[in-house]
Image (cartoon, rainbow, N blue to C red; front, side, top):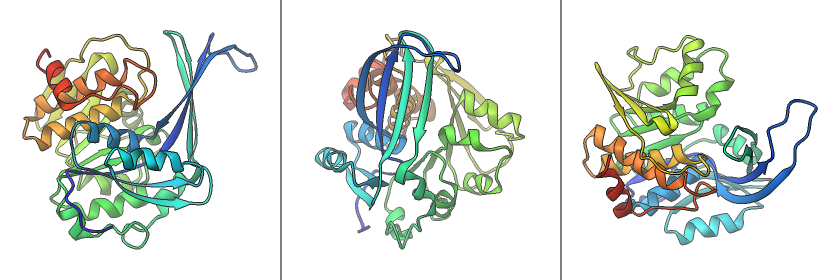
Length: 303
């Protein structure tokens, strides 16, 4: 990776999302009708990078991509995202969402080549060096790739590092020591309320001195809880009609990071994150209703 002038460097997955509207989510050994099918670009890392770019941030994405997604590469390149994609022979990650109309949802994930992301060496495989990270405004790590993230976080001492481990925490039967080591250099930890509940059950104390300065807990249409030091603040969501909640958390992270990099206070940056997320949920797909910064500001001002 050559030295670049970036606001945010996103490290995470790139995926193809497949959405199925179903008559109902069936019980085991039962069946249901598929009422509609849609396919979109996705992945926690790529989603955040795309929204961040739409909000006007100079954005880089570090990820892996399969030989079946050259169109996705070109799409992100045309958006002006600095791509540091390691091409690997094989299939790009696939996400499958089965959702009832206005009801429940179940999801399945085929990791594809993204599973190799955790095994890559930042410098040898991805050309990420300390002097590159030094010039980046924010480093954002998406999903749970502990081996890689431990190495990246070690390069981020004193940097604005945001970490959203995502659903990968549900693989933890106990909290790995590597997870704690990542948190030592993390400025902001982002979890949804389901992820936090699971981590607490296996012994994680989010308020212990693990290094993280700020904890953000997203709660869907109930907004976000902010924990910083001894302070706890609930930030409301922007009220809108939800068509598809997938990707809302990724847009939240992009809006929050954009707010902090533009010198908004923590509470206001979370409001900006909630405002950004409100656009994504209004249409199917994680990258199909992208807001501009001015659009986000208008909704932020009403919260």
